[in-house]
Image (tube, rainbow, N blue to C red; front, side):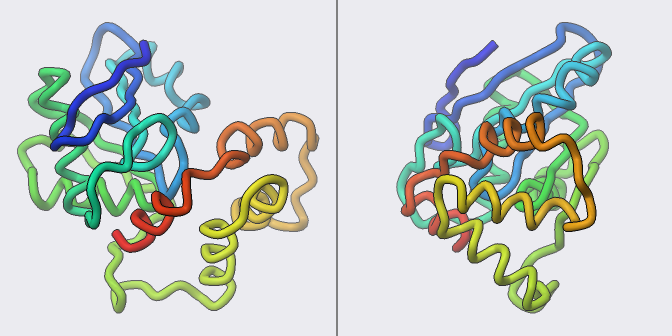
Length: 192
């Protein structure tokens, strides 16, 4: 069910799925709405209570006052757990969501039952500098819109040699990456 919660003074959009089992918190990455978890949520919800949310400035969540950092985004996730009445959860983060999940585990260890990190880094300017190719792709993802943004995500996520049925792939890419957040939101998340 789609809802909103006031988390640290910012209105965050979230959805819950599943009615029984241990809680699972899904944290999405840079500028992507939490709805991108659609392929995982139903299988997880068969045995768990699952929540995904839109980070500040993504999807239907407010950007809120700036500036903010990864620690603030982790505190937003904890505020959402509080809102749901969940003392802890299995935490999964992808990309920037993985950075948020790591910070959540460091700052609020008792709230994390387990930690799953996907395509992420420990962050920091010197912690894991991207390759030149990776930096170029990140810049494209952060600045483009429309079909060019979708193509940039396809190039980032899939090897050129992979040739799937383009229909379903491009439908998914359009849903998740076709409409970027406002420029201010992209810049704020990039700074975080």
